[in-house]
View (cartoon, rainbow, N blue to C red):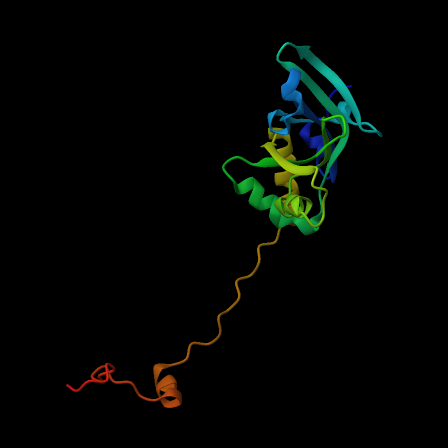
Length: 188
């Protein structure tokens, strides 16, 4: 199945994705810090109704897996976060991962919103066996996200600070201050 062109993604609120996970070999496999998220792949061919792990490569340095069955979903309420993500030097995709009982890294959720990622990373809202990792955003996701943000992001209006008070009104309310007054308590 061919990957849809970006114009076919226009107007879609979710995209099927797969997350590539690198597992170290041997004893290092039990060290969570050594597991890596290799990237995010986008397109219908990565779609699945169930989450499934596919072995991509195995060798003396470890294994490379692809986890299918994940989606990036867009919400209008997150449009500002999408805009801010795209404005970064390197836009990212946030991947929530969980450590399984078998010492494997399981991608749980994928988002492009910093706010959603931070909520997912809050210790009150997730298991201690979960973490949020980032990977560079694929260019096709960037184009799709930019279209959505342009359509739904409305910059906040700057709030007025209130009316400036004239110094005469301030002096009348607080008392007149003369630059010649000595505030040190001494005499001139």
